[in-house]
Length: 186
Image (tube, rainbow, N blue to C red):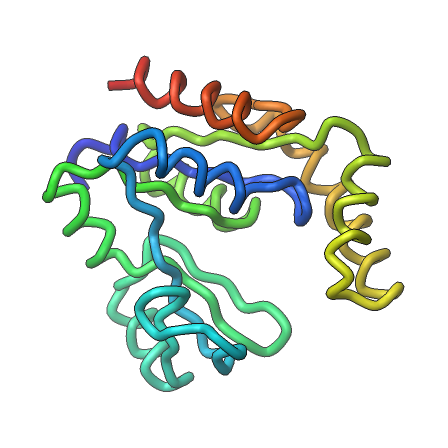
């Protein structure tokens, strides 16, 4: 893929505010596009194919893996998730800078394949604040919350492997910092 600086990897632990920050970035810059992942899981209520995810059968997903049609992919909880290469290439060709909101292992896969891509890790202000945000969502049971917090600790320890680390103390400030990082890379 040409012009790897047009590919920006955004990661951080669950609850850090990645989605909220990315939405703020989109308001600031109309030449940004958030990549849509593919998955084999069933759509949740309100999710639209091609907008929230590309919902694929397991066979179709495995076929795409064998044809090397993903920038990265992984299997979680009996489902596959991946970033289709075609849509990313099309958006870059159309002049967009593509943002990939993915987890740490996927980010590592992309940096190995595309070392010139920009990787940004978003940190929480503190571990206590991260726990507060996860609990505030009220979408997980206690066991899931504890698993997310344990996973967050592992992910935060990998932050030094990224090109940039930004602490999310306020959505607007974090979006501005990431916007500046993107600008200086072009």
